[in-house]
Length: 143
Image (tube, rainbow, N blue to C red; front, side, top):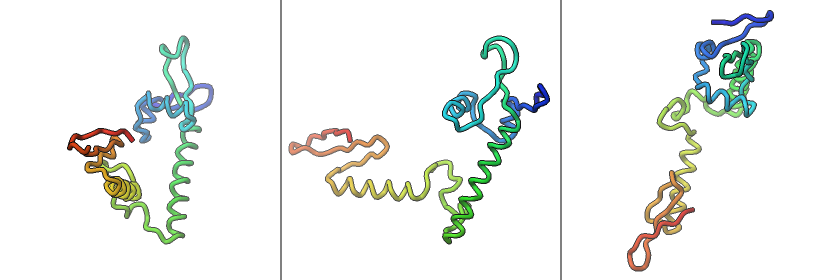
């Protein structure tokens, strides 16, 4: 439902969802505070909790256009370097691995380095390693 006020078009939160912005209200607020998403406008009388938020349609459309342009420039730069397009990346779109293949390779290199340094068990998710003491006891050392 587009909200029309003062000759401008506004989008409600539901409109943002329909346009493909699948963020929670709280996350949109975080992005707004960081300057990564257009700021909302409080519509209606009373406090912000009593009123509802709307976003200026032109700002949202400009934000979307900027994101598309950034994506296209990255694809163009990759094509000029002769790199494979993003869609051919085996990690692209894999919900189990949100990181690029570079990050996966970096993690493997990190694990190899830790093992070479004497760690008998490597846990990169917590950045801790276990070392065997001289008496066989395990000592947990934070990184």
